[in-house]
Length: 435
Image (cartoon, rainbow, N blue to C red; front, top):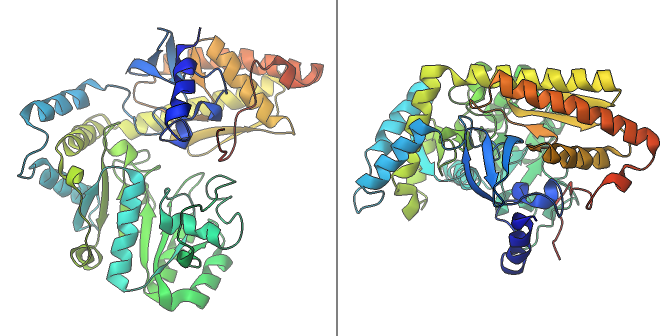
């Protein structure tokens, strides 16, 4: 019995798309078999609705829980905040303390505004940049959320976002008047950004990008900084994914290039809703000219969780553990693939690790890998975001199972179509409607 799948089928009749987050759709992992829902979680263990205890070796809360699920120190801070009253007519003092801490971690930053998730924090950053410059257009590379300003890129050339997010994103519901306001360029492609600046520089409010994803390129970041200065655009670093994994703060602090604004979320508060935009005073003060305001941006739990998370980071050097565990997994994937003959490439920075299976049957291999690992008590896919709760011993046990499964996958490839071994459909790779 799979109670989670039964509940998910009910959800699909009530919730368009089935879930609130595309990355948590069961179809993205193992259609018709993924547990879908959980009772409770602690450390790196998740208990599903049928009581199965599963070790999470996926993206672990979609990258939000770098300490581990229900971390006791963060939970204690959250419980104290709730018991003290999480919302009143007055403001919580934690938001001032958190602002001071974020500016201390990022000496270039002088002002802070808050939201409660990465997507809306990116939206706030773009609004501030537009208010500060009086311009409309945004050049970007990478993924920056679901908002109109971003999806407007697909109002132009068809599939403009395919290499930045997922293929198949229709800009349905995005006003067509936004066409031409979001201008994509690929990371590392100087000529593309030069062309945008040459043709649209006087209208460019911001250049927005992730400072690091699969690898660092300091010279390209310096080039982007220079291009922003050249045309008077605001340089925004989106640290929602990479932030707090290489450094207790934004990853750009390890690269020596400073933006004008930076967006922080996900790992800042270990699974509790929190997001922040930090930046230079000259740019951030424009937030006072624009109406940027929301009731739940003033609640107490988010800042309390963020303070507890960052204090633990500083005390334990959590980023060092994340890099060590991520490196252990990447090396284990590569070694297991070599020994079993599976054509596989492991990559990404260690705290954002992933692998890709080569060949036409790569998607079938990935889907079958998830199926076989689930049978062995693991939530697993082609990506892994380590947590403090992942110990070397837990990873070693996981990698032992990985090597066994890689061997089965290689043998299955040689014997015939892998789809004959799947107990459900192939995993989804892009945005698809659920009928």
